[in-house]
Image (cartoon, protein in one colour):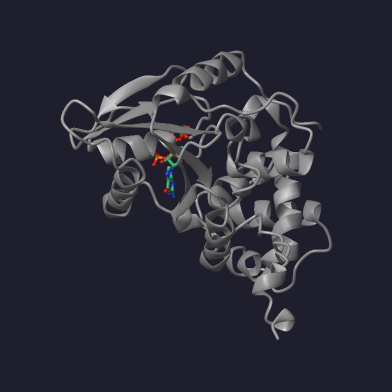
Length: 292
Ligand code: G4P
């Protein structure tokens, strides 16, 4: 099944972001640390120009720490981009983000001239959670159903920083279906726009290939089954997702598996690793091989 999800409010939201971005000093793009590539909206990147840009690799607590570190290194090589791994539920971790915003807009942050920061990202990456933690109170709706926030609002943090909250925006075509399935596996796609069983098989296949030991441990499997369908069956058996007569309810099993995976019950996993960045050629004059 092809995954496509572009609720009507998203194109309007993108227009609003395009307008608002002209009047902010710093943009915080919230990414899911488990899939920093697929959770980045290139439409947002295209609006960037030279604006200071912070990529927050959120849900760091759910991602493979070594891989997140590698992503930070890759992002920090991009001009004007800073990257921070974060668990936005942790107040202590979010403090450094405010400091970084202030650092990136040194001319602002004075009385009457707050640092104007916009928070953007796709649905369900933790934008509202981050805003609430930064504000120290509940300002934005948090939920496991993606696309809960549909309007923009401004929040004065009373520390010289004003945040603009924006709705999660995806892109209309979803040409990269691998990426779309990764998004679905982590919960960024509305439940009505995907077939949960197929997404469960996709996630099962990935886990068998990349994190087999986690599957064995969590579902008490001595050996891994031959294919994702059998895996989801085994998971269903372990979690008691049965139909009358003792068969496995595959749909319920896939749902339960995805719920556990998303909540980090199997362990910290990353769906995407950075591809090896091409080695930049050293300019002739700096190349020791060319020195006399
Ligand atoms: P959004 O505004 O970008 O759409 O995302 P939102 O803040 O609503 O967060 C979506 C889900 O992700 C929520 O789950 C939230 O608690 C969870 N979340 C956000 N940041 C983090 C993080 O750093 N680590 C982890 N582990 N989870 C995070 P939910 O199921 O609604 O959770 P809860 O509200 O029951 O906790």
